Length: 217
Image (tube, rainbow, N blue to C red; front, side, top):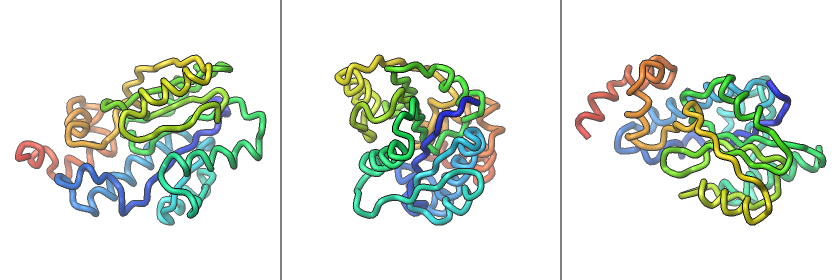
């Protein structure tokens, strides 16, 4: 795999998967978050840089990734990510590329990450959108050329910000990175295909009777 750092923000487990609260109990949401994080961490390999306030997440990643603690003086994902990118650039000012990747991608594989990294080219930003208009993956070449805008409709906001900064925007329809697990419909999508059912997240969800819950919802 190309030697591009991969920054993975991971929320505190107590705040994980809030949009699934009507379907999953708190401990189930935490377990699902841990499973998808493990999937992403395994897919990324030693290039992983984990940004998290959660000690359990940090402990699980120790020895397999660099850990960046969140800055208590900064609020929200975008401020935390901007700060983390600043830390990385202070260490390597000429950093040519950085991949920002979400931690809840149940189909993520090493091959999917390699596909995105193979698109590295100066003056470009390659984005993978989520099914609801978020940004699941963003390869910045170089980083810190426009303001990050994670949150609702972040894909469109990132495209607009990159264009305004003179960055060529490329989109990648990578199914393995396009599917996150934020809503019941995302879970339904995961379970439609054998691969999703047989993966770690799919097996866990099936083991707790998720299909019956979805049918009743």
